Amino acid sequence: MTRILALANQKGGVGKTTTAINLAAALAALEHRVLLVDCDPQGNATRGLGAEATAPHLYQVLVGEATAEAAVRPSGFPHLDLLPANRELVGVEVEFAGLEGWQGRLRDALAPIARRYEYLLIDCPPSLGHLTVLALVAADGVLVPLQCEYFALEGVSELVATIARVSGSFNPGLEIAGILLTMYDDRMNLTRDVEREIRTHFADRAFTTVVPRNVRLAEAPSHGLPILQYDIKSRGAEAYLALARELLEDSR
Image (cartoon, rainbow, N blue to C red; front, side, top):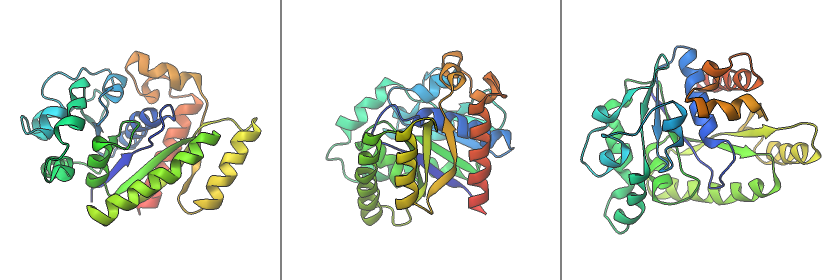
């Protein structure tokens, strides 16, 4: 059974794309078939896997100029495929405004290929606009990367409200699959305070695994490699393998 997870947080710089790339690679390393869908016009997930968003890409899929099957390509990492994106995806925010039934376009586009994979991970932009709504309608769960900072806590309530609206209007099965604490530094009081708040209010939905601050994680995208290829012995690689195992265990 295919599981589709949107990685979403309207706040930027929380490790969302880093998580999308490295969780996808970790699941693939554990021999699960994974498709990473880059739904961010910045295209960071695409470049982070060393790929270029040449045609066909996600924008063309969403506007009906290409099929998802034609746009999907191997990532170079075993068991992991990529549906790339580039700046053209910005057009969705303008072109889909007022267009009837636009909310289901990504869901419908992925439907013919979804069963090829055990996991589809959708990397959302840092906003709650059309692209994020497309991802939430297509997904069955939302994975929320959360930086251990005060303002990150404020953003969670907005995202939860958006998830509730999408669930009520377009996708009744949508739920929070988990909250992941990122850039974790247990030497800081603020980190421990944020963790305490999250585990109090989202006790059953906060992952046990945390992703530490790690220089190697920050370096890997510039080489177009997931952390498992760049430095498999790093703390970042260990964290994402642990997250993948925790996610697999929760799915059973």
